[in-house]
Length: 296
Ligand SMILES: [Zn+2]
Image (cartoon, rainbow, N blue to C red; front, side):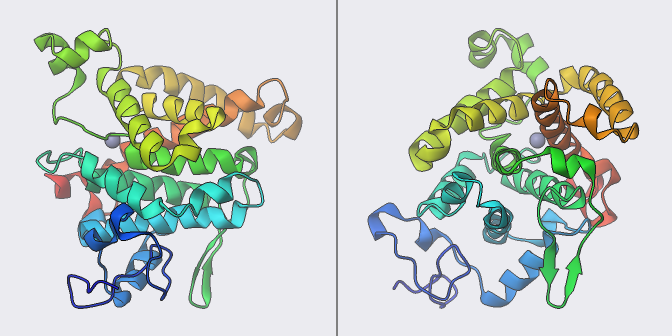
């Protein structure tokens, strides 16, 4: 067992008191250290709208990602989600993803990725697509919604994983800048969703190397590509039109329309895209501690 940076034993990613069992050569655990008392603070915060990514350091944010993914445990009866979420290499994958974000970028960095992940997690709890979070004796248990019933474990899992990697490698400039400059990335992706395509491709490589089971799942991969590409704001109006149409269907409260076999898959994917879009730009309506101004 290696001593931690703060003089504490390094612990496994699963909040366990057992030391990590991954071979040292294959493990990033020595790069990850968090006191036990802070673990409780993180796990309490992730299920609340008051969560502020600025209140936590990078290791604590990474723990928030672990805790969000761990909620899939309750949905793990739908294989193969459970086997993904508790893969031996989960911490290694998360640390590799963290390293792929540019520390010099002021906004689109690992903190933003965790902020979006937490917002997605909160939304999924609110629509009851994930089981409620227990805080000691208190249980945050919002009423059941039809939207929560539409999403399946693969959608909630893909959303959370996509949120973590949706801005991987962001260079700190936008698509218009890259296009105007004729940057290599713009040429590679034909001026279309340049950064989002890049994030997708780069994140796919990370998944392929550190979480191969996810990368190899075609349904999961398709979902994640659609989810990450949906964060391109140049398509925002199209998504708003689709949201208006979906809203009408949901307002009808007619289960036959909502769960229509012909359209339900398409609606599941649309809902995933809308949820990450909302999470990606929700700073403008967040509590003051996590508002847009606090990121400047
Ligand atoms: Zn983003």
